[in-house]
Length: 356
Image (cartoon, rainbow, N blue to C red; front, side, top):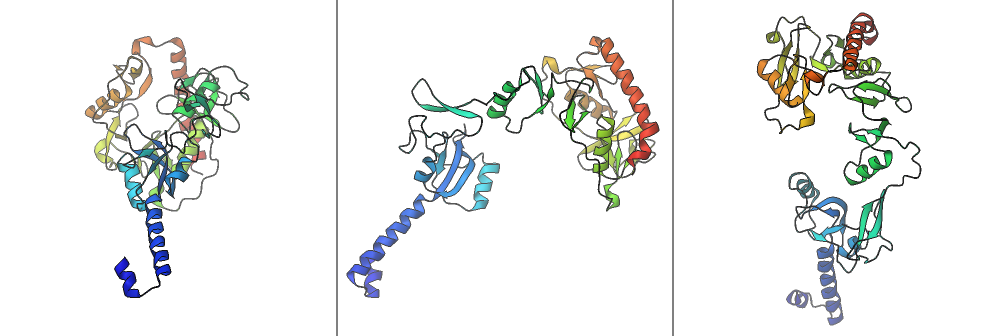
């Protein structure tokens, strides 16, 4: 550097100024790293907060769990770290840094959380949702299909694990839309796993723009598009599902049906039609409460095992109800009778309406 300045024949004062600027720029380059919201259990920085930020600025944000990485890398490298590598390496946590407050003063924990001092007299963010506006004190059904003892318990779970978790309806999660009161203009729909959900129905669908949009529903009805099938599901209150892409054909067996890549045709002997389904190669170990009674009146350890069996046989199997086939009750028998009547009414009355 000095030799270069001597060649330029600059005055001593100007030389000192240039040397100081070079050191300043190098120092700034080192300081410009990336600020992250947390350090994962794998030791890597996760959830990018602000790129191009110095450690001092990052750690002064006041958020517990904030971490910093020194490397100033391009966006494609950050993307690769976050998606494929489980976070950024060389993660430096702000916890214990001289920039982090050792009290709860000015600590920002984010929505639904509050700062409390732990046993070691260190500030810690804990889930503490504001439940002052909760009026319903009974159990609620969450959007994850699980029952929570009350809305406040659901909000705590939302804070800890499921950020997109919301209340679907009041009361325990049900296997039927009977007695389910959905909020606002949402409608109750039973999905393919026999769980009741509250969804918002799209009453208007755009006109068809391509013949490739046609879908054959599991009910044997041709739908103009996926939007039309979703609308029919809302009107019916029961999940229909897609049998295969394209218009429904009068197939004599699965040999007449061409499934998309990764799917296999399963034959529904009762309705004499095929359905393209995903076949899972490996099922996780089943729990006691995962047993299901299938349409062949056989009890399977889980729905996954039932689907595995269906794929190996090439025959469609569906869940009749959860639990053992020997545990069926009068209520379930009544629900099945109602469902059969409903299916009959769909084929007779609903088909002309859905094609519009």
